[in-house]
Length: 180
Image 1 (cartoon, rainbow, N blue to C red):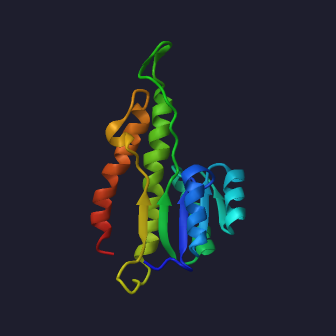
Image 2 (image 1 turned 120 degrees about the horizontal axis):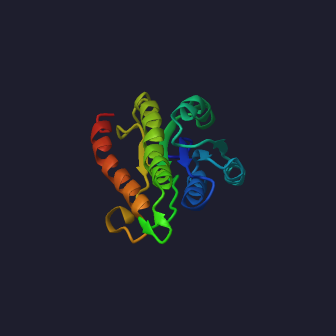
């Protein structure tokens, strides 16, 4: 797929894998929207790579829907979404101070799985409206899972469950979107 001059969104782009991905895509000539819940981190990455920064919680549907038109305006022809946003707090199901926090479990699943789906649905819809490129594709979505989806360690119940969800989500969505 031709990437130079195309638009990309990288979630979790303010640090770690997301920041490195945004940097690589910008170096390849893409116009990159850096999405992160931490505004300062998003801004720092965007300034470093010549991209645009957008700060919101990826799992917040109304916020994403509200901000998405501005993201599309910033990147132009959206051809790539890379979902890197994620959290990984460790915790035992049965800890010395009692049972695991349901709130923490929900937060991990919300950011890692719901956030992935939220941006995927918006980006896929936008890409489905584009004219196909020479090889017939309109765009690409990369969902970041983890080996923890299949080989989770003690203390990773929430993270492993969320990444297992991302892995399970990706195949049926790929089958659905293949028609585009």
